[in-house]
Length: 488
Image (cartoon, rainbow, N blue to C red; front, side, top):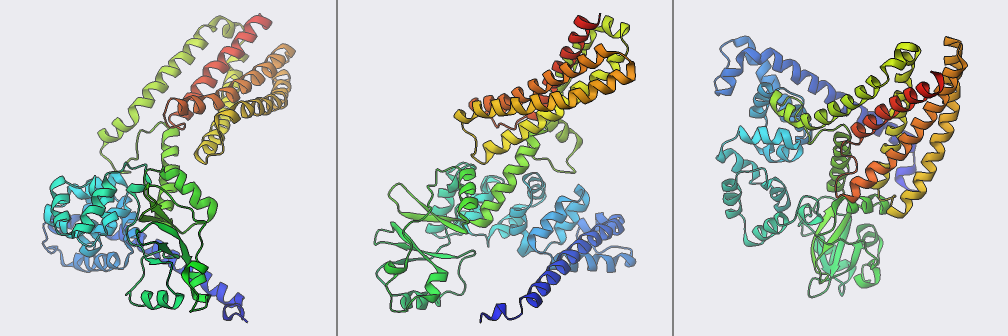
């Protein structure tokens, strides 16, 4: 019997209890850090200057804060820094263990990383990146001063310098920019026992090592040897008889979003990166792919809301204004157009006051329906489920959904309007207007992201703003136009 299955309930419950305890402790620690920062606020000038607080009652809180930060994982420390205003953030950053500085810089958001780097001098930055791997240094290189990068490279050997420069030569959206150079490779003509002896020579294997890469004498990839197969294989068996030859592999020029989709589709933990000659040059790992998926999801959310880039929660007012102004200006223009549509029917509204109370309903339901459609389309594009040929079929389907919803909910609101105002004509206009605006929302909800993608832009960019503008102006025009034609 498998030892892990002798009492699975006890093992599972224990693991869940331990996880829950860790989560609760982390939440409590972060809350305590915020409280300690508030207590220490009067002593911030002394702490920033490296001077012990004059008030002796603040010595204990400062010590407690230092201990709490020392116990945090770099990723958790990054989360704390992102949740603090600039002054408190600088104090916490001063108290974070120096040996964790590089890892924390890798974990924080781009906006917060910029503020942290600005607060560090050259020696602090060099110390922070000293222990980073080549791929990690390459990830930070664009945010670091050029002089710091140049001096950091001088301390590396020739192979590491070449790796950093290779990673920096690719754009952020390419696999080469995030590939890891730490890997284990072997030849196919050796026995499994030899491989095991070779692995025992390592102090530790690279993170996320689930397979060993099998190469020929020219370092060309021939296959992979999964660790799980190596552990149960006959020690005398040759690697070439145990290895897997059908391998998901990537080129450094490949798109990282497509790579992330492949990791999700094939349940990968690591995958090799090869050049045009099939030579193994690196690997990509699941932790990087999780970051890609998270960043793309956050970018889509920001773009749909009309934000140009990720924003520091406590950024200066003017920086936030610059990040948000463009789509607010577009929204202002579209709102002005909607107001002019209403203004064109002032006479109709004066004669039938009920129109003023009912027209927001038509516009609102159209905007909600359009946002549902556009969210689904953007997601389908992001996951590679939607191609140009499928767009026409999807448009027909969405039009059908909109027609059904329009007739159902339009009829409901038509009856309500008839009962409220005792006017059958208003009820019929309500049915027609809601149905037509939902049809408009469905059509535009499909076409906006499709056209944005064809124009080479992010399909999510400003989509929420655009769909709301169309359904507001269109809804007012349809409803007030129908009322003017048929009720006056």
